[in-house]
Image 1 (spheres, each protein chain N blue to C red):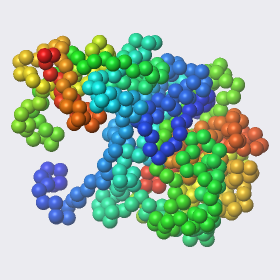
Image 2: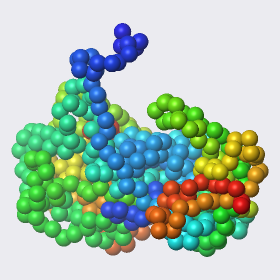
Image 3: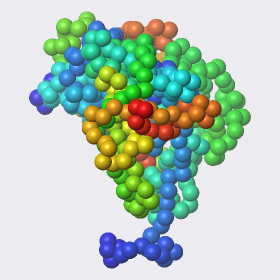
Image 4: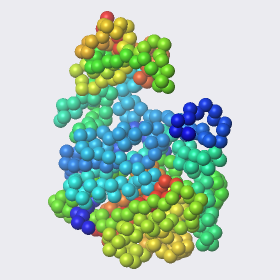
Length: 158
Length: 387
């Protein structure tokens, strides 16, 4: 029966293969453009801040999602952050095993309310703790393209 | 039915463009903020938010409703995305109407967004899997097939020519010259349409609306709130939606039965018995020029097969007896699918308030209608509004 059958031969007439033939070209958006240009050119992070709600956004937003205020001034919040939480990943997207497990974290940037998900680099697993300060490690400027991959990961402060 | 009255009191709309720099979230915020500002409300006043957006495969964001939620003002509130293909934009106010008419919300923000430019090489590719995966997909159908087959069947049934149909594109693109959001407004002739590239006979390039990025939003409120906010509420007096089978080869393509079914629901709710006389102004969905005619007939605004003649007679022009798509429609303003439907609702809202500016139709219209259509040309959504 189809429900339990492992599909190994796709040439028999019991099934078809298909795919949705599209790919995507995403724009950074108004705030994203500023954020990633600054990552590329200056190697630092920008935030926006809503005075009414006392909340800061990293990556920045052009609007406050609590009150809809327009946020149009950008603050350099530096590249140091704190490990909010972390994990060690053993599996790839297709379910296969990773050759080397990947250490990744949610990093709160500076004293903002915002953060980034990225790899932790230069640590052993037993060195990691929640609340630990970390610093963004960027690719050399000439190799940066204005993307999240311009950041290699977050590493030790020194 | 024990339902409360529901009014539209505010509206906002972005420009419709080929490719927006803004993300979908940013477009949603721009339209939503504009809508709230237009009726002096803040996000804090909003009880519920509903968002309409067509396939995830357009923006390239799976679970687009969740992704757009913060731009649409949904954070920390009851928020839900609805989706009925191309019919989504006119379903949006219906979804919001459920919330307010039922008493669940006094103020509901209704947002519609589409960012089709993300999708390469063409958004049409995203449609491959709407066709049956066993009987149709292996033939590599394009979206154009269904319109070409339907248009040809429609022309044959009623003896209508391509030139008769091209008048709709000419009219709508001209109307759009006065719409500040318009993407493809231009003054063209029937010959221009007929001489434009054939994409899938009988459909030519200028018979079709463009792919677009854009967002629109409206504010729906209960009667009590409406009386407090404005002297010019526009009431949603009738709503209807209906779907036909996706086995489209089994259907009569010359007549959109699902539109008629949806329209009958909306007319019954609104107490309309003679739609051709009682509806003063209409915004049927016009992603293709023949669809405006097809939909006018499904909406029973004229006898079957007669919509082209009304167009030729100028009845559907902005200064005609029954202005159709005075906004410029999808053919002129552009077609960011869900946002287009809501753009049509907004056009009727502005026309009924006498605030449509250069686009204002004469004669102080009292009753208007917007309609959209979608899925495998099977979904009809209809809203009747009065001032």
